[in-house]
Length: 487
Image (cartoon, rainbow, N blue to C red; front, side):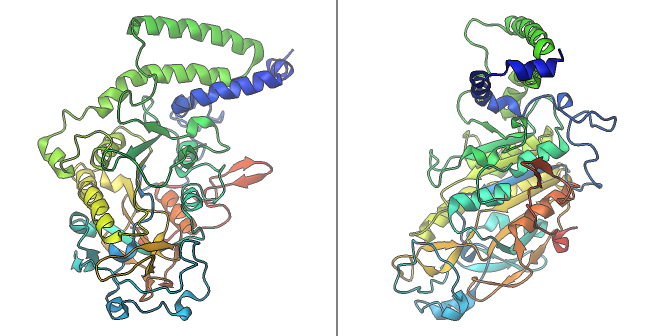
């Protein structure tokens, strides 16, 4: 009997669920599989995996570093300067501006929507005089390397669907994340490290803020080997990577060799491809015992480099440390690195809290740009900064001259991009005087994702996966490349 037919016959309900549970236990290593074992069988298949025929055209970027400000930074206090609002202090937002647009339940019960002008000072920076808040002096110093997009917009108005939307192209869970799509399409550039890595940054020693679920870096309906691997800031970067007490490297090698023999025998009997996946997982874990400790050891970084990233760079898990680690991952060929930092959800006490948050991220962001640039890596590394939506011009809660809060605002907000394939030193798009509506050059999050894929040599309409009878893609059935921000 054919092995695949035999596998179908011996597969029981208990076997199916048991195997699925085992897969969950190894998911942290599943994206580390040798992609050669799973790439389509064609002579054109890359030695590092990925889909045949990709990239579709010559890419400008080889890799992505995505700095995600979870909780939604206020564009009004950072990038979208609205000086006319000073004359509108404590006046009601005109109905003609809101125009019946949806608002959250956190402010829908307010009797008024009083205008809260930003208390931050803005100055022009760079060759083209981009307005940047006093909160971001270090980022302002590299503004000539950035494309600041002020008209990002989304339909999602609450955190979880909004983050899920921008990460996966759908507000509903279950779709592959952007990093997983790149792993699936382009494969790996380093056989000893994951294709897709996720770093979580601490704030004041903890995380806090909106919860971040694994689906945000998940593989959805793609193979789980494309899922992002979260590196831990304490203990083993990947759980169970170190040998148990009393087990030497030689003993581990012998054990894996014998286990591989047993697995190959089982594969010959039933033809289950998950068995080959299991063999590859064990081998990658063995190689990572060397590659990951070397990756996280920053002792050989120069004092100049460490000073660039700021005083917290030597504290594992801080945003500064993760930005440096992101550069080291990029250097070693990791395709997609996602750096999360939470606590941007500032419904009250915004002036004080956003000053703290910007103080944490400002210097490391600028250092990352300069570090990549001086190493000749910025030209082929795409760096992205921003959150899931923006903040309202009207105040949530009590308003004073020095204190205010802001609610969620999806209609327009700011992100910046830099590096591989992006035109430097530009500000794109314009919002109205209230930073409430887009006046010109809107950029939907589907457009943003289409542009990211374009920089990597991918036609977003052609990177698809058939699931449940239809072809899915990161941009769903939408999206257009924003040609004006491309170099």
